[in-house]
Length: 295
Image (cartoon, rainbow, N blue to C red; front, side):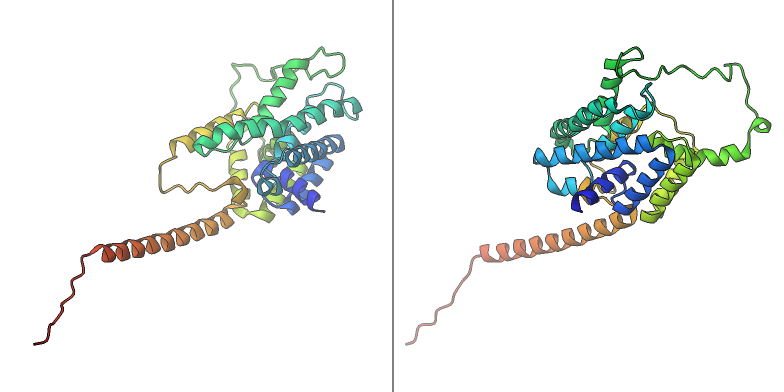
């Protein structure tokens, strides 16, 4: 039961949501999109989580799903890019192997990024997925990849005007864009993902919709990782930005409460230190005693 809770938290942590019910809704959306992709995703999350437990990784981080989400993404995208299509059972072998490596790569990267108090984010997913695709390619006899070609539907000199835009397609592109985080292109699946976010945090749901509406495109999640890590490095010494450990991050509303608790504890600590310092100064002062002699 506890392991299931960790697995669904790992599925939801792809969207920075520490909530097993949200993870269950995301899993339902994956099954709605493609049951084979969903099966691979759950298997990858399970393998990467169990690998982290066997490696003796931080139990608090494992319980929050932080060692599961990279396995989720690796397994789903391996199934998405496989040219063998659905229910190619041999794909489970590299799926298990790469998901197991997620915990090793995460642990190795953490030993480096922790020096600057940075998270690894989805760097293990990007590294392992691209290594798998580079090692197999489109002509591999057992694990061929989809031969991705540029979209030539619109020539480079085509001008897109407001009249040529379809409002319904623009509206549907918002849930589709959210679903693309998991490699899904169904608006119904994206709608379930948005519902999972709304259940946990309306703030995250709103930002996900805004980001999708802005039309952010990426190859894997490299742009997200690099831009976020650069921002965290640049803002390292800005006191107005509070950096929370990922195991303590759940959703923005709870993070603000966590931040207020940190501030309150720091004020209490500072007050206690000031009292100790004042008492120490008082003890260091020279003391004089008057002695009256009789007669």
